[in-house]
Length: 305
Ligand code: FES
Image (cartoon, rainbow, N blue to C red; front, side):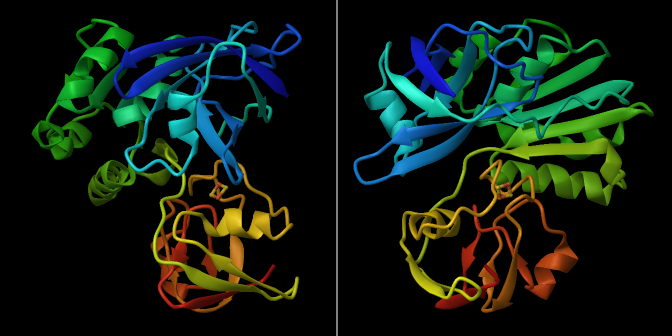
């Protein structure tokens, strides 16, 4: 898809809203609440593929809306959108995918988000028909921007001190039939998911979406056994990006370690698992890796690609 930027709205010094329409003015594909869109963002040396949750109404076929935080040590995508993107610019995109749909079996929705993880929840709020309770954790400096996006309601809570949110109490005092949906940075998701697990929440009632793609780390070497290619993974690129730079096109979807689409068999080496997809047992086996986010603890990895 080719999309044209039709609006740029600063919500805070580091958060901007972007409106995107079809380049030819055609109706946009339907994207349910929780869907994300993959944008190809030009960089000086490479094209970045970044996923952003759609916050526009699922019924809006005229414009998609995304909200982008300028990441402090941006590898390219958010910095370009904040510093260069302007109304009229064209961006290539993939058709929206929904890996975080509203759980329809829920009698009540407990929505927990942190930071820019509020974005899929904003789409949810426009179509939820069941009772819900939303707790959003954000920095004090972002409170104004997020407060402007959220409805004022007794079941919507903003927390500028994440530690003040008593997760154990909250998760232990929900009515039967409540489903938990959580989105935020890894540190937030880890605490929420661990607390839910400790309290015995069944996995089928816990729904998650991580945001923010790969973060950098120590460079390493990856041998792609079936392709007979050896690649260097730089400090500021993901293993998946390095594989793509080598000319291969392995499957990927969320590029954030959540969907499982990029799962790759690991033949040798010790991975630095950074995903939210593999179970603890699978991680301990070190026989699979999610190359969109995970890296290496050993100088070299051998992948079955
Ligand atoms: S692309 Fe979704 S986990 Fe890697």
